[in-house]
Length: 232
Image (cartoon, rainbow, N blue to C red; front, top):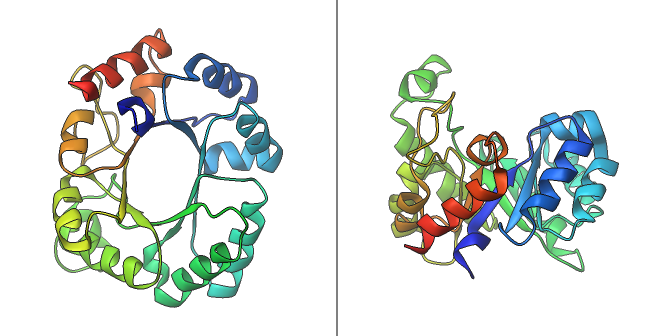
């Protein structure tokens, strides 16, 4: 895998033409693109198909969280879009995650199924406010172990937890890390962040990067700059 292949660019937009233009500009410079709830709510499955038609792997970031049967149905529908990765919320529990894993196991082409542990916008105080005891790192590890036991391929986590997760869950469990900000980029609304090279050194397999690339004056140059940092 080339260093640039680790980069998935977040297309957090409701403008399909803009998303497709970004995808074309970044083709060959990054490993894939991520489309999430903002994109999907506005543009739906047809929007995802249009992005996929660019020939880039797609991370379908819809964070399914419901009863097991509903999540299984949602995952089954998502498979028709041919994603490279998709995700569910680990806090939905073991039965829900198993339902997602079992549904994907029946697919001719199996995407990676990831669990979202603790959102990178949440700190210890935010967890306490919703009734979760302990710190964010402990909650991430607890949910990541449950995801692995439930048959999922990996987790979405902060780079700050990546080293502990890699040690606890082994070399084959995928770690997908958002909240990435190069030294030269603004932190925006993320609380638990790190640089691209730090994240990979700590064990991240894939990096989800949005505004440092999509908000740059020249997104292609920003992507090249990050890939060069990873190469070093």
